[in-house]
Image (cartoon, rainbow, N blue to C red; front, top):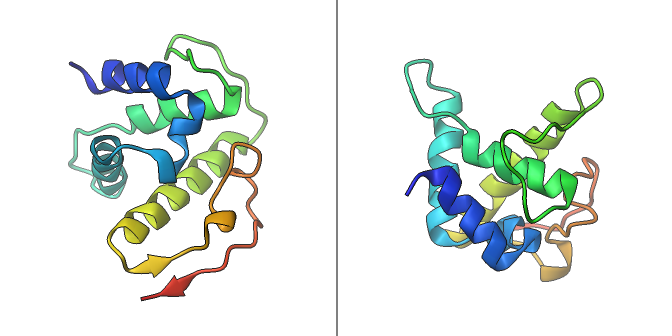
Length: 125
């Protein structure tokens, strides 16, 4: 099964709340981790397609989002949202690896995941 189809199936099963980094399955977060690593590798042929699908679903707050859907963003809005989502994914990877701790109430929600200046308490372990 392609990564896109797998993510769509995951979204249909878990809803968009499943796309919050703390709710992602280990399999999906590992795929996202590969895509994030590939962003800095000019020779990589791995695209950030599943991250973008997740991002579009979160922005649309829709359980059904296809790459063919037209989504309009103003200015650099999409890059800000992409960077914020990737940052949260990286934080979640470190949280799962027990290198940081974040109180549950500081984890992102559907209402605040894209707020750039969100206050988050974090302890380095």
